[in-house]
Image 1 (tube, helix red, strand yellow):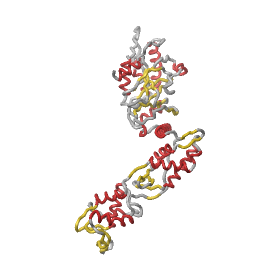
Image 2 (image 1 turned 90 degrees about the horizontal axis):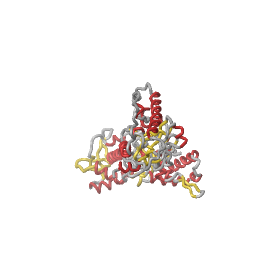
Image 3 (image 1 turned 180 degrees about the vertical axis):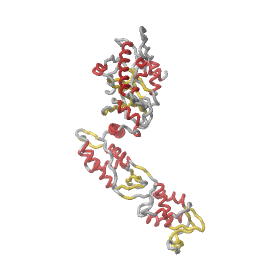
Image 4 (image 1 turned 120 degrees about the horizontal axis):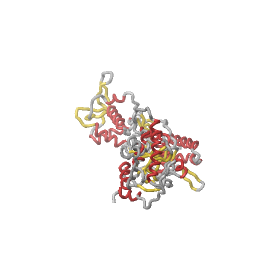
Length: 475
């Protein structure tokens, strides 16, 4: 059995349940939707610029644009689609889906889409006893829905989103003259539960209505590009719901913000470390055991004490905006646990200093008779290499102390104190260095690259500072 046939079987009614005819329902629905479409068109009258989402996107029945029937002629009602045709159309627009046939007020339908008795009375038309819905969050291709009850908000988000701009969407006439709009997303890391915030609802496990068995599928489906596939964490969400979705995503991955044991409430330090790390650019260099941030191509080291102070201030701020924040979370011990979790959350490994030096010598230094290389020029080239590659390097004194033994072992040369170099005064001067070595890429003197640089810093440009931005609030 194909997927379409399987879905068709799910939405095939066993016994007719309607107490009124399909023609009656269709006529009344057509009338209401035609009025809705006309109202939208009147509101947009005079606008000439085309837009991907327009009031014409409102579900409009075919009969609304067909014009009046000739005098004396009876309009033949259009036959409803077969379950196979309906399932095929839905699959063509949304891709592989799991369809079900449920009542409009099924509790698995989010409140933003559910049509209960009170809402049905306000619609002024007979609500079908059964509808066709899509089950969200199913594997192997998890499907999620973002529901907007405000058309303006939906339009603005869709037109500005790189992910959803050209994608297909659906609409559901839950309220009179106010359809609900639905965007769809396939994501391997989406939130597998339903979340509501104001006029927007994320559906991760519920059922989203997409059709009525007696309606043409096009009334609710708006065909565009394929349903987008993207990592949830990489999507730029609307600013008014971003905090809700991001916090929910982190709680899904790392547990709730607070852990409750009886009357005791404590911080989930893993959550707070991961959430704080996402906004401040902080990294922890394994092997060097230091925190740092990257600014203007430099790795700025942050002492552990400054990171601890930053975390304590951040937790203090959270305690003033979140009523559920436990007082135990303000203790230094809690902040220290968050710092330790940060080391795991933002850990990165750069090549060790000895690995960097060995790579530099392989790539930039060679044996060549008749040449010589001063320690000053060698360190200058090493400094530039570390800065260019973003690698950790030895400080000048350490480099000078150890380089003689390394070059003797690698190239078989000894350190000399009689290298003749012409100084700025035009006179020869003796310098320390190595006979029989040269840089592979010669041109301007490597020491020119040190002009304006503080060689008291490490070759990778690291320096110590406590200037680090606090992370954004999850509250």
